[in-house]
Structure formats: C-alpha cells, structure tokens
Length: 147
Picture 1 (tube, rainbow, N blue to C red):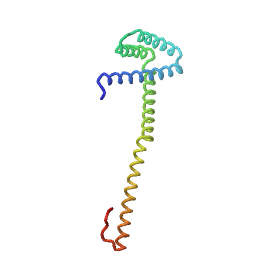
Picture 2: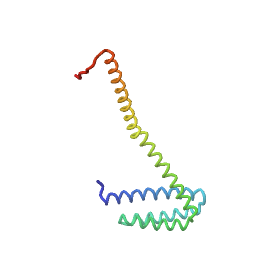
Picture 3: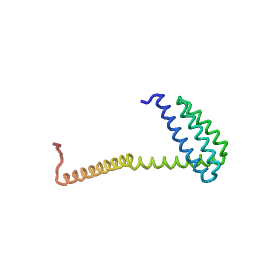
Picture 4: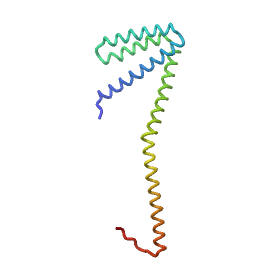
C-alpha cells in the first residue's frame, strides 16, 4: 500500500513532467511564431531553473514553477498560452489512447483470447458430450459409468 508521502511525491513528479512537456510545446510555438518572445521566455526559464537548483527544499519547486508560469503567461499572452495548453491536451489524449491500445493489444487482448478459447472449448465439450450421449442412446446404452 502506498503512503501519503509516496502519493504526494508521485503527484509532484507527474506535475513536473507535465509542466516540462508544456514548456517544450510553448517554446516550440514561440520558436515558430515569434523569435523575440522565444528568446525572452528562454531567459525567464533559465532564471527560474537556476533559482530552483540553488534552492534546498522540494516544496520550493512548486512555488518557483508557479512564479515562472505567471511570468511566462504575462510575456506570451493568453493566445499563445492557450495554444500551448491545447497542444498539450491533444498530445496527452493521443498518448493516453496509445497506452490504452497497448494495454488492449497486450494484457486485455490476451485475456480476451483466453476467455474466448475457454468458451469455445466448453461449447465443443458440451457438443461432444451431447453427441456421445445420442450415440450411446442409439446403441442402447442406458447407464454411463465414469472411471
């Protein structure tokens, strides 16, 4: 069982990954749309990255990234920020679908095939038994003794 501290750490790690992915998408948009904004955003990111590396506590990461987000959002504006959010959401959805397909193609598909095979065998066994009983009846066998 997972402790509260482990859950919090896992949540923080997920937040970090998602934020870094968002930053990559935002920077790619800025690189294509506006090189000046790209350069300024890069400076902000470097400033806060250095500030985080100098900090000592894990909780400071959250406050530093929140401050960085505010500064970047003010710099790039709602439109560019919204585009990056939309790209991130679309990417996350595609990745989620890939993961589901992978699970389906591996574990779930295997379970499905096993169940289908069990049902097929059960059906075949039932048909075989019924056919044998009919054959025995035709032969005049009235009692079947299991060995």
